[in-house]
Length: 449
Image 1 (cartoon, rainbow, N blue to C red):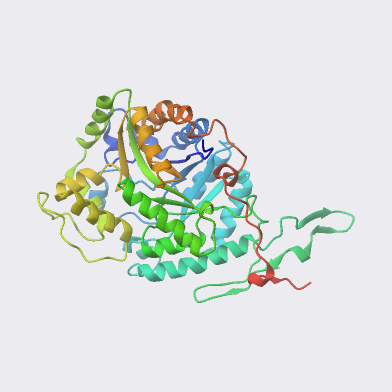
Image 2: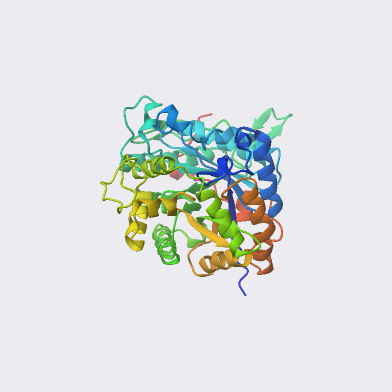
């Protein structure tokens, strides 16, 4: 029997992932604005043994009118790193993964912030690398429109190289604290980066010492061809949206093969598809949970959600006709492809597509008893389609509480999930090795005495 364990992330967003979560009679919409809501969720996930809590982000309100936006809560009210810093002192073992874009924050800032957070949390931090794909974000940073998809990823590849280089500018044993010798640290064990590339010029070294984990865990969620190339190069965890076992397995095999071609062990890259579980004591009750939320969806809001992912205005589409072919945009290429394939495979109308993607924005939705949800997760996990899952509770806190109370014990009974944390850092709990510091031959230059 394999001792391989399923990895689980708790994707925490507002008061739930379902578009209509805030309208549910048992949901307090004000909770999305309260820190104690997230502290309670993180503690609950830690008590259940989750590897990490995860916070997505972007850097703009969607490009709709304020009147339109007022019809629902904004999912990214909290800046992730600020929230993670507060949660680091509320938790002890669970990982904290936050999203920061490579497009609009200089790499030195990111490297320093995540190094500080890794020390503050005792080595429990992960960086979800994104490239920002909306014109609304671009206009907050002096641009008329977003950079092209290819350029964003070209910049990101260099960006990651700079950030990892900065984290490695200090040796692990650089500090001496030698009062008699008047040496706080060994100058021979600190070096400049002196990076000069196409997009960035960064001298270094970093002000912070080397992170507890060597480097915070690098996470990525892009499933486009460019995104997969970047993940194969640098990611250690990949979040992805997949609808079927066959599609998930093809993605899993393809990305592991890309990593292997780059000289990496496939085990150094964990793939965790997103799953939204509706779980209850009976399958009928679980289905009623889904139906209750679906009945609260306002069609215009659903069309606006579709517009966001398609990168075009879909609000005027005929709900009873198939989704028309749209030209590729510079935005969410992988999600556009997923929606088109789902429409063709199941012969869906726009209304049918909305019904499928509104609950979890293209992620897999599972509905049933604890045993049925565990069956689905186990099939993907043991079938070569996943190393674990990023769990998207439909409402919060109830959706997370239901999963913790019903599914976690079932996974443990089957020997699929940990009984307790294996280590004190996120890397240790994910089974990822601590990286060695880069050598001087890898573009780090000692600082002159």
